Image (tube, rainbow, N blue to C red; front, top):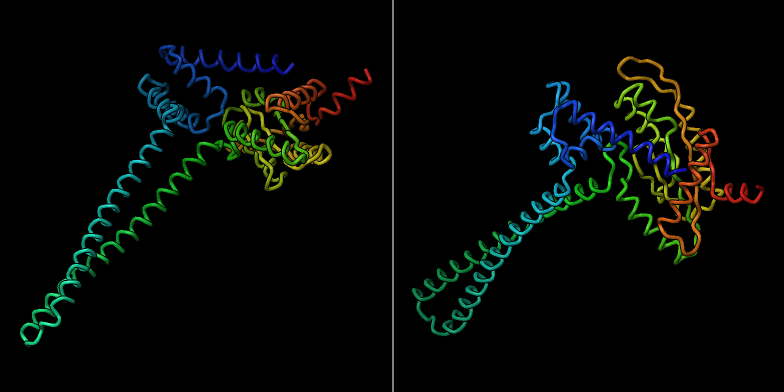
Length: 350
């Protein structure tokens, strides 16, 4: 059963996390366990890279190192802090713009007052000296108004540049929050959100929708034999193959450690099976070479389960059927594609 495999896999990660805590003589706080569990699963590429770098230079991880790593890579407030920083910059820029606008409005008001006064005294200007004084006053008022207008224009251009930069920062934060760093596919958060949206659309339009769950066969054994870096290479390979096998409106994501999920809007079961078979055969066709030594590591394979949307489906129900199909593929020899229709037909035959 899928639950049994999840149990075995997560227990291995948990035991590995405890061993790292003991090896580095660290207090077994929940944060310590979370950090080393994440490291053991290989899910956070940035964290693994940082830990490996520290281990390479120092040989162990101290409590201070662990606190800094947690704050940088796992703390739930890290994106919030970055958003807060962007928000502060926006507030500061808006305050400066409002102040400049206020000065410009005051200058315009003063210029208007000067013009009204000029209009009222024009009939009295019957002497050259009075005309000269009048022109001097109006030139000064005009220069002040032009200066204020130029200041406002410069401020508006600068604010436009600043807002564009802040918008880019927000887009980068949004991308980071929804993207798996190692594979550049959508992360689990992105998958959960996208699946809910696609289910709602399928229910509204009555168009087909399929879900693929992919698992790399014997990944833990491969990872333990050749190391995390080679394991990361395998994950990137499967991710790239997945990207190259789907359409622009499909949603490929990294679902878990070595599991991937692909949402296929407007695709029926036949189309979904074709995509799955393309991914399976493409992955199997590639030979892996260890970058550091050039050693041929052979090939990896994937197992894929497919479910199709039924009216009234929830995210949980459609994932559960794809999960059941996936683990049927793994129990029946791996390197297979199994659909929920296959499961029903086998049940009917039995």
